[in-house]
Length: 240
Ligand code: CAA
Image (tube, rainbow, N blue to C red):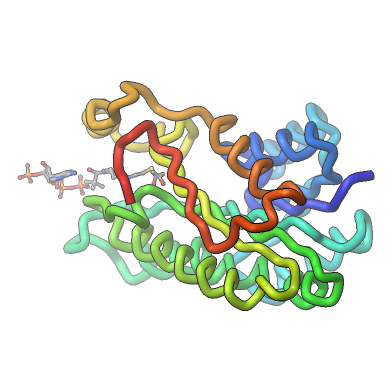
């Protein structure tokens, strides 16, 4: 079997495409999910990829979940922190709860996902940390002060981990997808979505597979000198 890869939020949307691409590239893949049992069961049925349920916003839950993955598959060598949520509202209407839920999942969730596997990566002298950030962490977005703050914070995590892990054979990189044709983007009001597509020079939404290919590239052993980088995949919508 190939290296063990964990993808959080790996049963739907961009995460599902990442899980499948890593499986096709020979990795032994575990996909975590937060709550949608039906989607997870369907995903396993279709792909044979094992799924695990935990809340990335909870440290102890994450640690226990990752321990289950490692007991089944072996030490996690590639971790893809992909799980993310939106709670969009203009700032004047945003509630503390909307703020906190997004921080817990998108920012603290990255800590909770990487921290349990980090010591093992250091001991073994190999690791790949890949964090799915967002174009909106780079440029900000009307209605997303919470989300943009967390996705910008994710870039800070990656750039710091890159420096800490480099001497131990660990790389940490981020991918900033633009607007991708997933449920998350489809939840944006249609009129707003059409306006956004009008701002994408490619003239279309991205495909989840176009993000998954970035992940397999960064996960490979021979991507060893790419560390602390951000790959923007957004159809030329924004240059950071
Ligand atoms: N720029 C400037 N003004 C905007 C605007 C924008 N992008 N979007 C809305 N507005 C304005 C409207 O024109 C309207 O103005 P008026 O009141 O003068 O008519 C006002 O804001 C609307 O205000 P409301 O109080 O009615 O806002 P609302 O409560 O209906 O919420 C919103 C609006 C939640 C921000 C909604 O516009 C929205 O969902 N926008 C999309 C945000 C977005 O892009 N989310 C990305 C989701 S996908 C994702 O996150 C994945 C990824 O990584 C890319």
